[in-house]
Image (cartoon, rainbow, N blue to C red):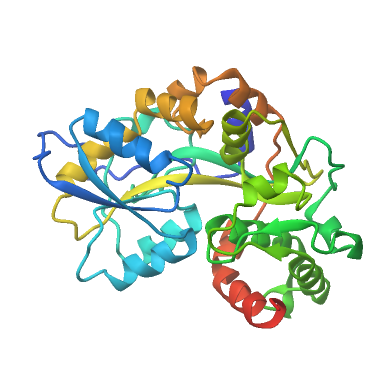
Length: 342
């Protein structure tokens, strides 16, 4: 299974770490409270993390923020940092933070155990999970073959997508637009690409805050909906249902969730100890057992539940120029929001 994941990420840069970044040597004061910003703590994950961290001696406070807003918030708080740790964001968002000098380079104790190519070469962020982004439907539905199929009028109001403030809908949007790269096109995208995205957005139901999108798919209110991979697996486990997911020939966007330390945190040493614990094979295996995540930690992946390995084996990574995406994603989201969302 690990070999398959390595192949999926073969195009990524080979991992390296600056020699000056070292693991924590001395224990920090665990009586202090760590503030954690995350977009990956819904569906019980935050409560589980608080409980297990407490058992390990850590006192954490989780602030849940949509993935598309965390980077802007941390940059805005750069000179008066509130957060000590952030986790759950994708590479694009972490690179924004890196560029703004918001993150503190470090090397966790488990650095040599993670899938090569996923960590920042300069040690600013480190991976904990690998996340395929999918379109899911309940067992009775006939699934479309690709995101672009949803431009057909017959799919009008048949599928739900999340507001573009979140990381998942942004990356799915990017995975569509990246297919239509055109150096002479608007914001690097051809006219055809923009027309496809316009129809994709306007045919969709955009979930409102607090809407129970899981039940809506299970009960057939909407035939299909966006979901991150482990969210689908967790839904099946918790609700005792069987879901299916679209498997485009081109593949699906894969993102990896990462951990980072806020540079101006006054508890950086404690933050590193927390990350040493959270990203460890033991904790990531427990995280996978509980929430169906695909661990980036190779030792945890080897022992992950069979259903997680089976799901991962059915996914195919779309080849996406993430550097191109990173250059344009904010402008793409702005255009879509202002011009296409009705």
